[in-house]
Length: 177
Image 1 (tube, rainbow, N blue to C red):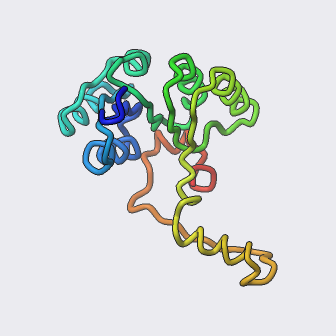
Image 2: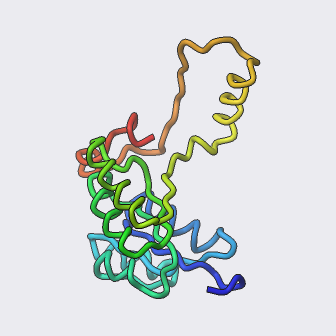
């Protein structure tokens, strides 16, 4: 891929967070374009593809293997991340995966081994690491601006609760955030 060519990103998962990523890729990330989407609910993928003018794929492997897809964003439910990451490791394309990888340390290690063994670039969606407010607090603690921290209280809100089906397979607000 030449340096002046836009990076094609494929998004797996067209739920709330997947649609958010698809929109950002399609409309706000310079040097990137939405190359395609996949969702286990085909109608969801078709709607997102129509909205943002990209291809929808009928299975995750087709998206990952597509020559138009240079990088992969895994935005599926938590319970699918391990298998999807292992599948993605076969293609050695850079991967962004929403957190957490798994609710099980053993399963997380299994996915990370596949990624490491294949030398697939991976970034996890620890969004608070890059949040300016959280970064400022961290820097203040690290630089001794405040004393020893014994307890911290952080409030984070979404506009609406997740669907019940998602809540059953996610880590909940404490694990997923």
